[in-house]
Structure formats: C-alpha cells, structure tokens
Amino acid sequence: MDVVSDAVAAIRTGRPHAARTRRTAPWGLRFPVSREIGFHVVLQGRCWLLLAGRGPVPLGAGDVVLVPHGQEIALADSPDSELVDVTDDMDDTWVSAPGPADGAGDLTLLMCGSYQLDRAGAHPLLAELPAVIHLPRRVGSRMALTSVVDLLGDELDQRRPGTDAAIPALLDTMLLYILRAWYQDHAPRGTGGWAAALADPTIGSALQDMHAEPAAPWTVEGLSRRAGVSRSAFSRRFTDLVGRPPMAYLTWWRMSTAGRILRSDDDAPLQAVAERVGYSSEFAFNRAFKREFGLSPGAYRRQGKGRQATALPA
Image (cartoon, rainbow, N blue to C red; front, side, top):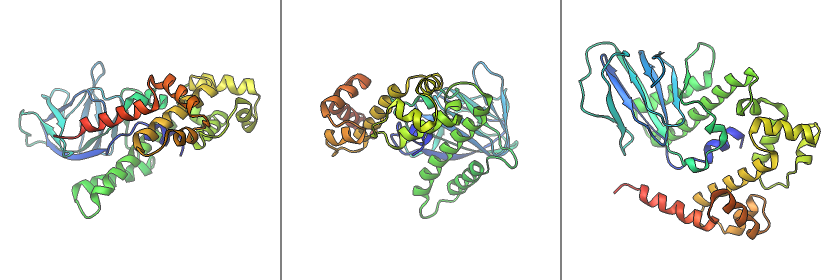
C-alpha cells in the first residue's frame, strides 16, 4: 500500500455513506461540527459554500468539497438564504430540521456524505490538511475524480443489484482521488510538510519502503543508502519534511499498524501482531505500544470492542 492509502486505512472504522438531495431556490443547509470527514459534490446547478470567518465561495456543477476535520459549513443557493440544520440518519440519508420549504427557483442537485473515522490514530498526513478543500471541476483535468463522481451519482440515482457494494467502494476511491489531487496541486509549491515529502524522490521513496514493509529491519543507514544520499543529509531532510526523525516515524507507523490490526482482527495473538510490525519480542512490543497509546495492546483491543458495542443502534 502507498502512504496516502495507508493514512486513510489506519483510521477508517465504518462504511462511508452518501445521499443525493434536490433543492430549488431559495434554500440553505447547515452541516454541523462532526467527528467524521464530510464531503459535498455539486452534481447539477450552482450554489455557495459558506464558512465562518471566510467569504462565500461559489460552487458549480462537478465541484467537490472535502471537510477533513469536520468543521461546520453551510451550502445555499444564495449567501443571504435562511439556513436549516442537517443531520445524517442511520439509513444514510440527510434529514433537515423543519424550515422553509423549497421554492420554485433554480434546481441544484447535491451529493453529500461522510467517512467514519477513529481520529485517535490519525496520520499526520491527514492532520496537516486544511479545514476545507475545494476542488473545482476543470475541463481536461482530474478525469479520474470526475469519473468516480459520475459513477456515484448514477448509483445513488438508480439503485440496482450490487449498488450497496458499489457505493462504499466508489466512496473510498473518491476520497483517495481527492487527497491525491490536493497533494499534487500543493507539492510543486516547494513548501515543507507532507505535500513536499510525498513529492521528494528521496523521502517519498523511503516512506513507501517503510509503509510497504513495516516489519523490515530498517535503519537510517540502510534507507539513506537505498536513496543514494548520505546518512546525515537523509536524516535532516526526512525530519524537516515529515516532522520527526526516520526511526521515530517508523516506530510510530509500526504502532499505528499494530493498532489497526488489533481493531480488526480479534483472533490475532499478540506475539503474531508484534512480529507483523517488526518485533520479535512481545515484551518489547508491549512496551513500545504502551508508550505510544498509553495502554497495553490487550487493553487497546478491549477498548476498541467497547467502542464498537456502544456504536450499534438500539
């Protein structure tokens, strides 16, 4: 798996969901603060994205908006339209609070939804994202993202055999394409951070190696040799871009990978989990895991089961 895919997979806890909504002017929808990653796509028509502390942003057909940290946003046919609160129901549909009925003006067709996350183990690649990402539709660019959006819109419009399996898969793909597009747009700017780290041939290659084989006996010397640079130059460059030294990042990623295994595989013995992330000693693994998460692997697994139990609908 690549670094961006890993970053998403590490904190995914449930099925993503989406729903289409038709609005005729005047209308306004306020989406509250959420622990999930929200997204909104204009399938037809036009509207405005409204954010606290920022001016209104016009959206057109094909535009995609991602809300990585779940902040409150609003969508409306006009910056002056009255807003009604929206919640996502257990059946994956959006429900708006009582408010003015849709008017008879221009039609806007939206696709809105969210991805369920466990932010306790969020990868810094995601933590670095801005509050809101707006990707305007551009002719001749981001064709893959446009294709996925079109397929999602079609599946939500006409439910057919296989739709329940197709929609989550397409939503996962859309999220990866959104992140890819954003990082590709920002990498050429020459700034630090993860956009530059992923684009840097030396550091990007080392990150791919660590993520592909977290259990391998990586060393700074070995990684720098593979990259064709000196140990000191590699370590300095890695720390500047990633925000922590190579071995500190490797340990963090190993523990994050272990946490994902513990959440998803109830039957995996702790010794087997330790070996999958590069520890031959269960004792050393337990100590490293507790240092990262503040509790033992066994307690972490039990805590995860408790969260899953309380999350089930009554």
